[in-house]
Image (tube, rainbow, N blue to C red; front, top):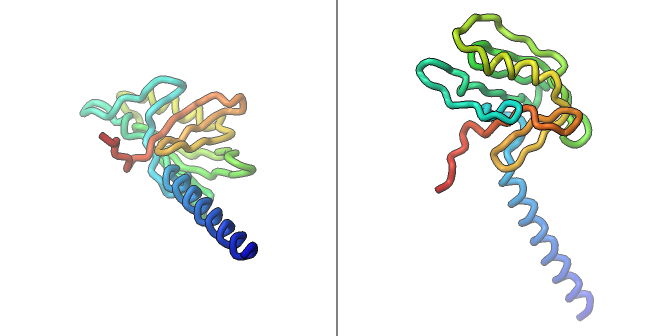
Length: 150
C-alpha cells in the first residue's frame, strides 16, 4: 500500500510541475524568431507611425540558429551578430546600418547608439527589455503580433 501511495504522489507532483512549466512557457515570447516592435527609448514612449514618420514601425528580430539580428530603425535597416552568455546576457558587438537620409531620424539616432550598450535582456509576457550593465532599461519592445486583450 505504501509504495502505491508514493507512486500516486510522484505522478501527481510530476503532472502539476509540467502544467506549471507549460503555463510559464506560454506566457513569455521567445527571444528569437519574434518580431519585436519598438515601444520605448530611454524611458520615453515611441509614438506609432503616421503618414509623416515611420519611427513607430521600428523593430528588431533575433535569428536563433545564425546568431544574427536585423531590424528597421525608422529610416534605415540594420543588422549584425549577437552573442548570448549565461542567463539573459547578450551583447551586440557588430551593427551594420544602411545610410539613407530621412526627414525624421530622431528615433533612429537614439536607438542605434543604445544597442551597443546592451548587456542583458528580459522577456515578460509580450515585452522585451534590453538593459545595460547597470541594469538600466535602454530600450523596450513589444511582440509585433501582440493583440491587447479586452
